[in-house]
Length: 294
Ligand code: OGA
Ligand code: MN
Image (spheres, rainbow, N blue to C red):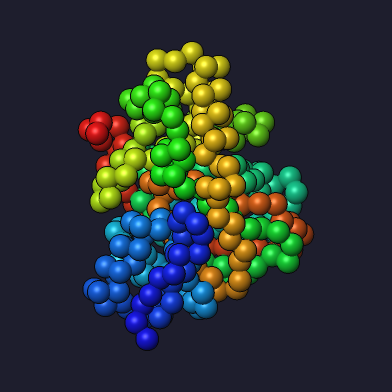
């Protein structure tokens, strides 16, 4: 059977069938997945029993893997997974759920805020690929919001006002909004704010989208409260249910999304039970501030 994609939400998201991503893909299959990403921005694959190495190999079809350093507070010696894998589980190295007051756990709660992966990096991520290795019994859905549809639905006046705005993004802004305010000197340096355009243009489809994220904490040249209110307002607009797809995980699902045109968040779940989710991230190719306004 050959690869096919069926749209499963009124505005975006494709469900892919007819491909085994644990094996090397043909160039035609890679091209079909890329084209599907450009169109649907989120792709769902079921029943893909991936090892970490297979997940990394599949991800490399779409570009180099992002260097995960600088994206979290876990010390190298506490990491559960090898370099190249982002651990978004609730587990420690012993395979057990992290303690309630574990700083890593508290930091990871930030994934429950709407965000785009690595928007805190000068060159932010292209794709993220998340594999369900252990599904939590209660909750833990992942939600995706289509920032192209959200942009399209803005009125012309607001589109004009925000067209050339540049935001400042940092992990200290997203975590700060949850009251996590203490960072070492080293962490402060690592989490230094970076600049991102608020309106992005997709390199292939030329569609515009809102580049929002919980990491966005200021707008260049705008007083802080005015910037925060605008960002909140836009986020509220962009995450209305008509722009949102809710993914209920099955074991061995793999979901990939285009961070250049989506936001996502995970919902609350039973943290006394494991939720083993493993992400690979495909690096972007240029800072958004390098983008010539369309
Ligand atoms: C991520 C993320 C959400 C989840 O992997 O980038 O935000 O469902 N994860 O764990
Ligand atoms: Mn994320």
